[in-house]
Image (cartoon, rainbow over all chains, first blue to last red):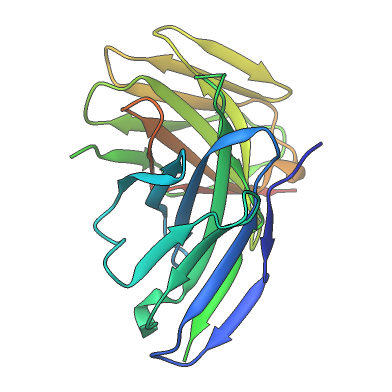
Length: 115
Length: 111
């Protein structure tokens, strides 16, 4: 079964550094999302991306965050200057464009630790 | 603002017993999803519920949706240890955009 692939699985960075989290969506999926989950808490929406542009973003997704799909395959989340509170598991998720009732398919996540 | 609440937050039950997890949401929604998450792992889609009265079953799990009451339930029948996980419901109000997740229910099945 096709999978959403995320790299790296674990990223440790110092406060103030830039990080880029990468996601390879399922090939025929057109809608892309980033969610995050702080340890032991619920999953929170960050941003949705369709047709090469952001379609919706949450209050968490401030100017320090950006997304892009530079080469038509990888979907990336960049945090420009990381803060301690950015430590969380970041999940990429994708869904098909044709099936309006299709569920999101989540990747295995990147655990980001900011020290 | 859409709010999604689950109860209980923690559930410890014996193998062989039945129990129900409840998911309430605050505003009209198009779709409701149930996901399972094992510790340190990703979210696995269990059910997609699309209309009032929808009921779906897979093995020992059955999910239902009452859009008028803004309530979904996840019923566990004759629990087995393999079902130990955290279960999240999530609501999609706007059609293609964000899911709003519930707080999660951590289920532990005791032999």
